[in-house]
Length: 351
Image (cartoon, rainbow, N blue to C red; front, side, top):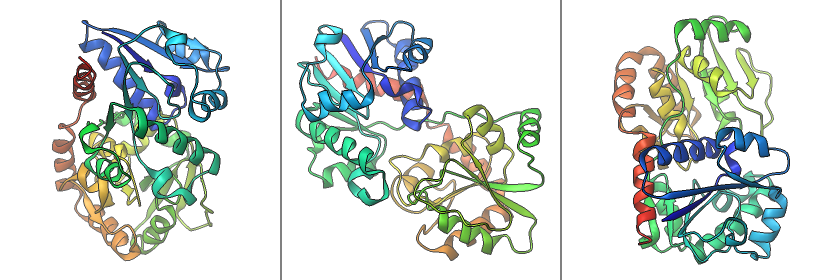
């Protein structure tokens, strides 16, 4: 079979970018029977895409034009660009027309569940894309049962949905890497870390809970990411490091006393697994996909209750050893090769 995969989103450094890169790399590794047609659209990032996958076909189509042609007008079948294919696996941004067996990965449904918490332009693009997924996709891959339930709640045919879990992208750093990165950012002493600074990541409650939990302890909270829709007030022992590349995030996570991740909503929750992989305890939400991913290997808290989060932080700091052991065992159940094999099984349903 000829399998077309849209990899346009691969260069943006997001969770979806890493998913796409890992999925394609592992598909090419395990599958020598089928032919893969990798394609993407970009004006300025063409070479970045080709650096990752030199065999790709990259067209001068910026995201805004792709949204207009494929989401709004829904014209120009993808076959006009890449030729005849048997399977089309689409990105999270656009949904081109095609005669092929269409597969879409839906990482989450935040644009439908929390429309007021995201940029209106991004929200509308995702809504347009998802509308075509509901109408045309033969199979829809989701990373968690929680996201499957969300899709069904919005009217998706359950028989089309396949749950395929994702896997961690970060590995435990060496002591030398940890010290080098801490020196670069001027980090001294103990700290816990929170990844993502948005309302959905629950940043404001994390800061309030940390302020309660830190009393009597010399410890800092490091926030990683660019603030989106959140105003950060100056709080003692809380520092925003801004955007961090993955090669530095791994040492920062490894060197921490724990990941604080009581998110309001996640399609999956990869940072939980990455913390497990880096050998640090995790405090996360007792709801949705986070409960599903963490199992009994994390401290589970009520994300809407500041006291619950604070108590979770205190518990993780007091008894990290058992949590680390459970996390190390738990993360072994997730691998990108397994994700690729199960995705290939979905492609084979086209036969």
